[in-house]
Length: 285
Image (cartoon, rainbow, N blue to C red):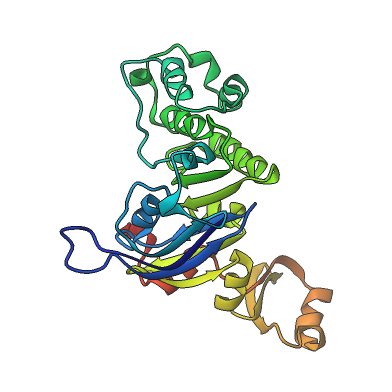
């Protein structure tokens, strides 16, 4: 869907490059995660891909065409949900939606979408009366208004309760199943783990890793099995190498004779990988 080659960008008043030669591809029908600490270049990259920033170096193609030469018809193909919800607060939700619907040739089934997201009953309420979570959900409705082929989602579930976050993630999965492609940035690693086919880590304007969450967890994890079991009323914790685990007599004996409480492989989490790759804790974003 997108192919980015040696992308470089410096802001007009910037003394150093913000993007320092990014190269990556986003396949059609893929959910592609873009992760990194604040200031790494995530937002800049997204703004270039959706043609909000120009004057970059390198080549970006969309469906094989140079995006610099694409007409405004490109915007019929994409849907964008920014992290900060932007709506006309002195208009109702439905008035907001109707305003933006007029900008597009294709229109989504708004009623069905708003019902899924729990907004239909409040469609005639002023957006200024909406909670943060409702505004975020309305943001997603706006991103889907033109039945796009490509979605750009920036922190799509941030500020949502677990139930509404799950509904939105289900909608993203359905969008993918219907052939859609998604570019997503988020600091909620569980969302990335659940949704993404591949993720890229960007640090200081450069991509450090690109792979599937599974492969990254295997690469950065320990090849160990951790077992917890009860013995004399106490919990005992032991670790054994994954290699040759089927012939490890002590491990097998524990499985046969002890009351096992937990059994885990040593795979790491995306949170741990984020910190290892970027050198920055998630609480510093």
